Length: 194
Image (cartoon, one colour):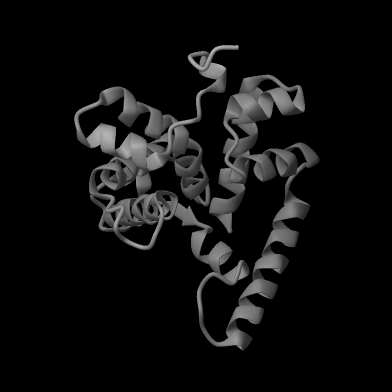
């Protein structure tokens, strides 16, 4: 067993890839993008677009990831994954704000679950009573939504919010890709009506 065998080589660290990417190594930049694409999808998932395409938000998130790759400062206390998440979320929020200014009609009807999820997860500091009330309201709304969704739609929504692609959901559920896409579209319409 040779040390040159790629199976025995240690995986490149984010810092190593970032250094190479800043030096013009496109392969290193691409590897970082592939490595963090799932994070982009997870950050974009809470934003449902009524009448729009979720891939628009994923593209915005990828631009935020590119900003993170180019701007990361390893001398700071935060790791790259944390910095990347902040850059991605900021880019997504900026896209939604821009859409609210009616600049981009496809994003105008965005339904954001991000703020609700942050409150439910206790990520936003604040009055403990407000946090508990927000969590309870979130649970009640999810319970009501759960009653409106079919069992397949609930399963798809859970996997979708966990960052799985349509293809991965189709494989996990044993349903055709088109059935998964149709379920996501129905969920979006139901959320937009709320």
